Length: 184
Image 1 (spheres, helix red, strand yellow):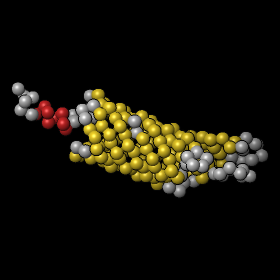
Image 2 (image 1 turned 180 degrees about the vertical axis):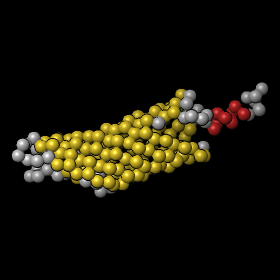
Image 3 (image 1 turned 90 degrees about the horizontal axis):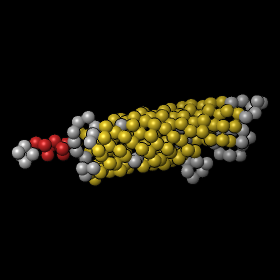
Image 4 (image 1 turned 90 degrees about the vertical axis):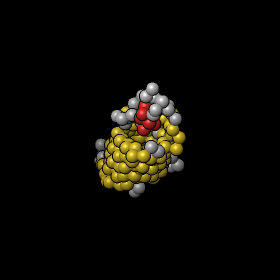
């Protein structure tokens, strides 16, 4: 599936808003349980008194999910994911006498995602609600600035839109098609 999302990082102090997109794959070896992999890119920027700070994060991870509620058209999936992120913070100065710099590094993340979804045929449309934590990542500090550093690490909350496509029929649909009543 494809996921587009907006996240608010560090909502308690100097929040930074990012937007991004990702790809995910979920396999359902048992009807209520899934295992998956995902990759994504997140972008954002914020203004400081001395210029603009741009943020990027590229992520790769895995997840395990459980579907506690499923009907023919509606479902809710809860998943826990973890992985690694490459974070880059790049500052651009407004003053020619002050240089610009960037910093990057690799860190880990973890996320809890609850996704209510609607299904239509092989397509599923979801609204992922997430809360997560990005472990110690590079921070951008502006010299002679009283504001706190620009950072993505810490707590993040997000909302997204997901569109998924399933290649094979759902197990409940196969059981119905093979039941004695459906063959009559």
